[in-house]
Length: 213
Image 1 (cartoon, rainbow, N blue to C red):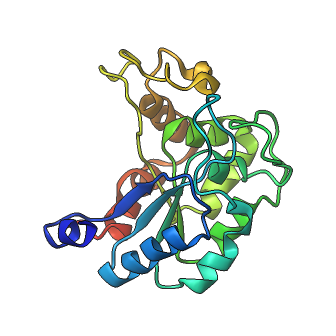
Image 2 (cartoon, rainbow, N blue to C red):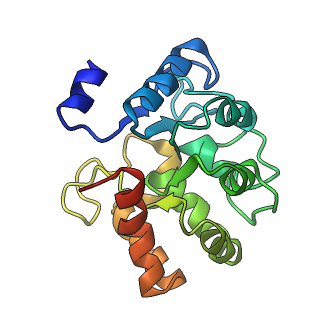
């Protein structure tokens, strides 16, 4: 089904959100398929359930380096809670959206720097939380990975202002209740980077990685 979709014009696989390990056989099949089809693959990494019955997804991000090494021709796009919480070196899988100052040397920062086949999706509450919790860190992080980060919305508000269900289905994201996640992140980026850098983050990187016409 996915192969047929790509042949009909789909430009990527994802987001992958299944109750399996990130290095497990199920997702390894997907990584191989992404390589074969020459499209990027976006993975939802989550170690902490948002609700009592939700479960976790693509677990084991702290050990994802082995996958990046094993699939060097696969373009991975990291997304969601564990990907973004791990910008801080002290993340211990205790909270979906940790707050406070970021400790340098996080797994996400290191992997983005060391592996040309890994990119970061700035969308959702997870991306916004990572960018907004420590402005001093954020400025340097965006500079370091200016060619590796891609703006996305992943916002379910109905009016661009936080209307509709917005973040109501995610208790941990209550700080953005009644707000448009995409608008909040775009505003943050505009305040932090130059206009040329803003264009890279919101258009040029995606154009290159997804091979948009």
